[in-house]
Amino acid sequence: MLSARRISKRYRAVQALDGVSLDLPSGEVVALVGDNGAGKSTLVKVISGVVTPDDGEITQDGEPIRVTTPHEAQRRGIATVHQDLALCENLDVVANLFLGDERRRWSLLSHIRMERTARDLLGSLDVRIRDIRVPVAMLSGGQRQSVAIARALVGEPKVVILDEPTAALGVEQTAQVLDLIRRLRDRGLAVLVISHNLADVRAVSDRIVVLRLGRNSGDFRTAESTPAAVVAAITGSTAEEAQP
Image (cartoon, rainbow, N blue to C red; front, side, top):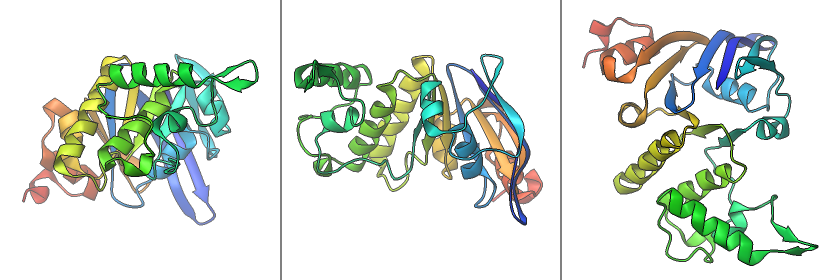
């Protein structure tokens, strides 16, 4: 679905990315892991159109594309759910789902149409929210994360990028979000998950891509890899040294 090839980005004396490559196939969850400063955030910003790379190319369905703005990324079906979620807590679930993309009939907002679409979308993702007309501020952390992910699907994207989707969530809420990520995969989407939690990564991903110091350090099939091998790729040590 989407490939980044030989992506490089320098900020003055800092080489944030140095020839990084990443493949995001349809119907697969790819986890992007690495220590702080590994280049994960910069790579995500390149793919989502926030940052223009100095070198390299991005292809979609095998065709080279230019993603120079977040709007262009959205137009090409690349949706990003940032760690801060960017929800308006004083607005209800329906208003947040369609914020900036409101459905209208003539010049008036079509509240009934938006509410019906919101219920159908949340239902298809098995997201349980008792009242979608309550302010988002009244929802749990897991429910807010689910609303942010559902909002990314309103534009029917092909690629969904999730930045630390389980950060600061409890055990039950984390399980709900991980189940939601699996549902995105089952819908045939290409899903990129950025996370520091290797337990969550192993629970939900098909592949694990490791960055270290702005370069590719490993690419593992999750089912065929060991935690020690992934940690070794993150730290630059051997698998034996990474054993607890």
